Amino acid sequence: ILNVEQSPQSLHVQEGDSTNFTCSFPSSNFYALHWYRWETAKSPEALFVMTLNGDEKKKGRISATLNTKEGYSYLYIKGSQPEDSATYLCAFRDPNAGKSTFGDGTTLTVKP
Amino acid sequence: DTAVSQTPKYLVTQMGNDKSIKCEQNLGHDTMYWYKQDSKKFLKIMFSYNNKELIINETVPNRFSPKSPDKAHLNLHINSLELGDSAVYFCASRDRAKETQYFGPGTRLLVL
Image (cartoon, rainbow over all chains, first blue to last red; front, side):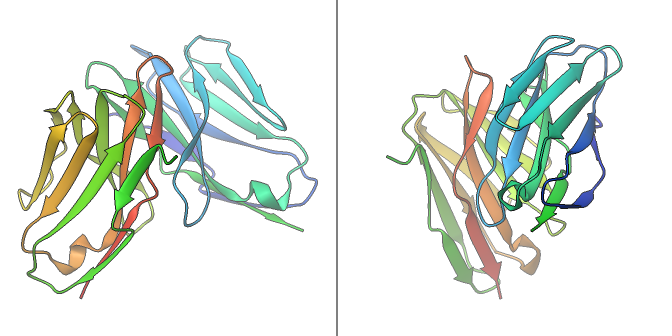
């Protein structure tokens, strides 16, 4: 059973704060790691696909880094806004199993 | 145009009934999935189909039977519904080139 763990489970910040959270995954046989953004009452939407050790991806105020050797990825949000409130999921792609294993998510609440 | 669509969006039914949820994707993807958002709001994979063939069955009760009439459709039939089947069910399809999954809007099932 693959362990994909995210921390913290939930996070409350004030508007304007910068924040980050972690996804841990198996460091052996790495293929790809995904980050998804999941707003309440909606469906998950892809943010980033990360495949190479040292990858850094950015979309607006959100960025992510990847360390495949130690098995972790960080997601950063700079200057959080209330519309950033969502659950952020990471998913570890295991091509041998033909599936992605999702973490349980970090739920971010940004207070105005 | 909706990329991944599910019907119905809401389903309220009595225990013991049989019901189906339909999923269609117009993205030309070969691989489709069913996920269940459990009571803790975590996303768990149920089934995966590739080109109409079942490739993943994640220890789901055999009351759940997926059917893929063609690679654009993956339907989920549930027999003898139980209270514990109440959940949100998400369909997704995967873009192999982008290594990204695209999720449907979810079907909110409530078993009374």
